[in-house]
Image (cartoon, rainbow, N blue to C red; front, side, top):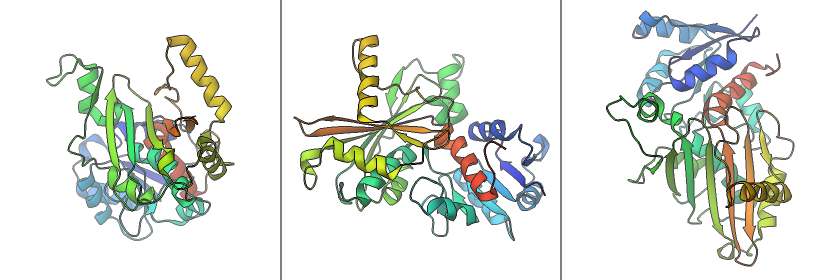
Length: 325
């Protein structure tokens, strides 16, 4: 029997991206909520319980309400922030550890990671569990995302010059109250015992993201080298490459990309849009041995591996499906 999938919030940015990825597949039956029924709680509850898996692309409070409507065998992937650190929910990051794909496959409640958090956790967790980075280390994470991650209002601010809050800015920092909603998620799933400092920003490009972790290597136990950091990450993600997975670029590969960027622009850089339109992530390690410093960068699409692509990967695990089906 073809499994039924319902996207609650299909009209939103993430919901539309998920629907696009699933629309042409014949191994899934998509259930749709008519426009006139979006505020009909009874109809929503009917579809939530008729589906084998529902994907919630809703604000936090609406996601909690949707969960309360579900009973019996119905399973959920929640793309909101509401349940990412909640007891009883499986964190939907398949590459997190060797047992996670099987846990997701069996789970009834899966929380889809946040885009900033996924990039940060992908770097932090392997370093903490391999004891290269103490759990209590004062961690700072810098990040820049495409504006599509902010939803319709932010998209309009960058794309619609007639919008009331249209912006001419090319780049800006935000979250300066230091209470960004991804921080608790980064701390818990990044295996940190102390709250990290996240400095998020938005650039004038639609999709793409760089999450960077600067490290003073001399301050870490044993003063590891960039080579040691790279080895730990490479071993952790060994065999997890592919169109949905994580690729740790070799030191030579990163240096070559670094050199190409320098040749083209006159200054070295990593491109935030490098993986736009894809569902995977690349991690780069850059180091200066003389200065005992390193920067780790996770590059991904904020709506791909950082949202819709990750949700589809989790869905496929839960339903035992292949992306190539």
